[in-house]
Image (cartoon, rainbow over all chains, first blue to last red; front, side, top):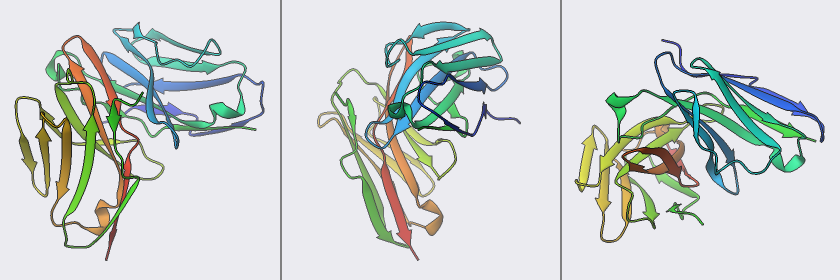
Length: 117
Length: 113
């Protein structure tokens, strides 16, 4: 079974450039989450979608960040313009629906390591 | 504010001994707790969970204990193995219609042969 697939695995860019991170959730999962991992703050939830609809984006740092989920099998996280403080590992995770209600278990991708110079 | 806290950034134990990882939380509304394990260059993977209606859940070498009055949970690994060396994240969920997990910063466990 294919897990959550993220791309790119590594991205090095210069400050001011646009960055787009991509995620393909596990087929049949109807919730999708974007997390960011840094040494200082650990794993922070940025945004999550339920049935392709954004439910909670309170963790999105600022207007430079945006996320979309145009269909059940694809999501993007965009940073424009990028800044050095955005350097982190960005994880996408998905979860099935009612069978996992109230359990919270997420299935994570391998992450996209972003370095902004 | 950190609602889920793992105050020990790292822990080192000898192979065969017990590893105890601790986690504290501040939100008394959390009703489900999980532990995730993360190896370098990989995503976190689910390890074990516990509902707030229980105080213990066991799965093989892994046991999670929950003390609701103290808002504290711990993960015990017995016996510890070198392959257990990883970062362990504690997470909490409000459940119900709120599906998001709130994570701690993680504890790096090193099991020495």
